[in-house]
Length: 300
Image (cartoon, rainbow, N blue to C red):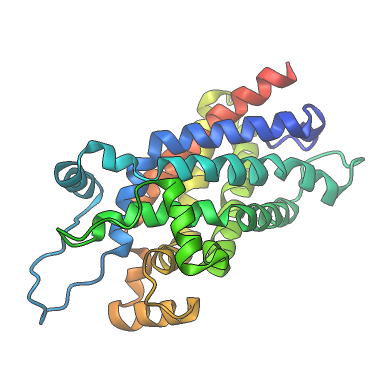
């Protein structure tokens, strides 16, 4: 991806297909980690005066074990259908458009390494555009993942992804599918910039080290670096986004931010940091490895 002329090597349709396929494959492989992350983020801090004992979910593996034991192992892939919907649209657009937008910003006649600020701007633009289109799929995925939070005996709101789309539109209106769009645009634009720009930058830096080549190992290291940077930058917005989409009691993004900060402290914005990094780090490694191979296949 760091080649400034890579966009000219394959068509946009091919780039979109490669991006969507790589994103969907990474989504399927890492969704259990994402389900655990969402449950940890939605779990409110337990007060010392509440008669509720210890938190239900503890840590990445503990959360996954609890979900599998209480709801069945398939519950770890709850939200896979809207998750694939999301990655087909969001992943295909944000990654597929990144190289063309980057080339547009520097000019088609540009030769050399693309400046970092152009990479960041290109990723911010494509991330914001892509999630604006894909927000309904993100909302439905979070709603389905949050279903396990309902008390025992309470019937589930949705029977599946398509039922969730129709129920939300019928009960809350069409505009409800874009609930949380503000923090979602902020989160995804920022994380997209952190992932794509940092991947390009880390990859270019590694390739300058003697002995390193444009190989799968280089892609793995660059993917891990991109994942770590994305989680550190995007975690606060990610927590607000998950709570806005999974809990309708918040009046606005600012209201969610204030209540979370006041009631639980600043560290609440990094709740689920390790499972988030485990998921995003693994997601980036799988996605970039798959993407690089797919693009090589089409470019010959």
